[in-house]
Length: 137
Image 1 (cartoon, rainbow, N blue to C red):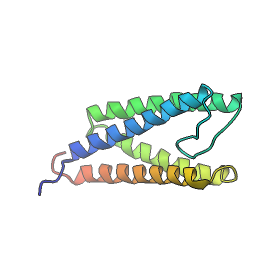
Image 2 (image 1 turned 60 degrees about the horizontal axis):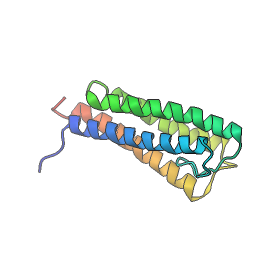
Image 3 (image 1 turned 60 degrees about the vertical axis):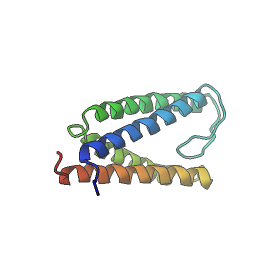
């Protein structure tokens, strides 16, 4: 059985991360424009101009990170460290939400959002680690 090479796995992880971040950015831009939909990451439905401004700023950063991950896919072996950094931020976001926003977050949206971030973080760490063990690199 042929196993995928590290270059392929790294490229997949980068592209998956870029697509996920791009999707989140689009949903946050929609929220910032006034559409009342739940936040994809935690299920929270915020209100007010302050929330819209904050989510707009977050959407700008998320767009930048999506572009950064797409850039990583172009040369995945040399840029694999980005996956480790991304994984750290994903885990940090879960910790921060639990520590500071647990009183307003909860329910299935929050659980699904946390699960997705932990899954992606784990995938990125495994892919990063595997890339050093594979003979392709």
